[in-house]
Length: 439
Image 1 (cartoon, rainbow, N blue to C red):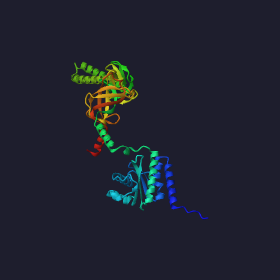
Image 2 (cartoon, rainbow, N blue to C red; image 1 turned 30 degrees about the horizontal axis):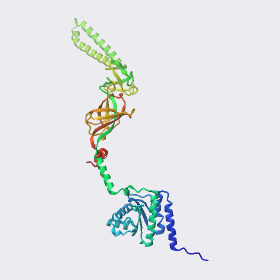
Image 3 (cartoon, rainbow, N blue to C red; image 1 turned 90 degrees about the horizontal axis):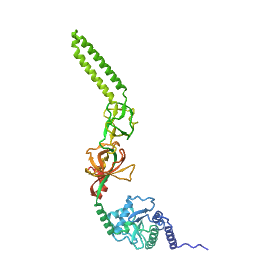
């Protein structure tokens, strides 16, 4: 008894059922997208298929990762948009390329195939949310178009089961989008107060700067950072070995010069030459006396004392001990702990229009939750390189209430004039664009 030969219709029907089963078996959106563009290729023999959701290509036959800027992807998205504008996107049909633009027809000939079928994906309200662009060389028969229409319903149902919410580009009508854009434009025109952040430090106000009185090496620091000192109290001492030796030599040279002057003064009554040398010896005595006084003055400067009551403001004594310094080099400040101001380093790129008396808010690194109010007092017109190597403007601000402890650091927020919100948000990008374009 011979085996029954399967009817071609039965085979197509079996393949259709298998496709529907594979589609509904997809566990996520990615696997479903891959199935929609690849699984039906054996049944219909198409060259390629592209899946579009909300106007964007999600999958292409034989490609694991879609390149959004590829020529074929751009062509398919443009063709689908033209179909929607012509009112042809909601019906499953063979695409009449003559209705498309000239550029799209040219791209279709070079990038796609001659026979194109558009399979729309519709939601429960029959609103288009996507579609399949299927292309091959042979025309589509009526039976194939009917099977594809049946598959379209299955594809739509499977997609909505995994992604029930319609993409916002299709969910929102054009009128609503225009109103939203208008509201955003009005919001960007709302005036807001311009502000900028900059590092800041609490520094002494009207403090007395202690500088090196001579060139030498610091032998020892006798005070510690933030230690209270009294007027006349010894702060630090220089290595005075060479200065003491110079003072001793100068004193002995003066004694020799005075003795020589005294001896010649006694011989002057009987010796004419000795009398003639008296003026020269007297001048030499004055010279040696000046050298001694200068050496003693340098020796006295080797001990630096405080000129006022206050606290010693400096970083670390170990930093200076044993280090050679030059005359005039800054060593420390003697300041009143109750008088302090805020020193701000505003980067050139962050500079905004600030006026004297502008509001400043300080947030200390040690206490970031509390705000210290201040007012801008001075603004440098010339930018200088800061300790961090950044070109910045120096600003000084006075505290409205009690000043924090001298030496504390934090972040200062400076408030400028009111500007539109769009300028507040795009100030830095616009400045970078202007510098890049040279405008």
